[in-house]
Image (cartoon, rainbow, N blue to C red):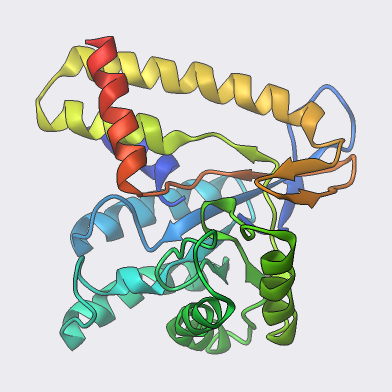
Length: 269
């Protein structure tokens, strides 16, 4: 269970321009650490959310990592519900407030983790604004503003025209877009690990943990080179400077992703 918590902490939803020194052979290398899909994934249990978040924030503070968390405010409600009781909603909002109280900044990741390949500009604007309500208030209470936006699934639009329409809405609401140059796809490992934990399969849990560590090191090593170049990410081009890259430690929770994880587990078994 302790190992699951450790992996879940790394995989807690799992990105903005907060810069820290990177461990690298090259001097002056820097990296931004961010987390998508707050308040938490995959659990909707408030107790688990609080435990995972508290442990994660403690690690970040101890290591002086100035991370940013991107919020899906729809997760402040119970899964499958548009409304939750006041106590449930407030308890989940309190999880987000742990980030702010610890001195970390929050960003907007849309209300519903919107699929921007299929969304209209009007739908995007509605979802964007809906995703501001609680986060904005929590930040304002600490004298901060909601500044950053992260595209769900890193999708910026199905065409240059739609991307431009979305960008105009973000500019209108004064957002800074937070791109990603390194995505460690930890959600795949987390889904398989969660299944193994549920089945009390310690052999699989160990195999997933070892594979996750190897994959993470490989991805970050490759990312250092990729960050020097303009990256084309699903139809949009980002051009980070040679000394800067963003690493996302987020989890995305679409069914298709979980299916792939289950298939991976089956192949390993």
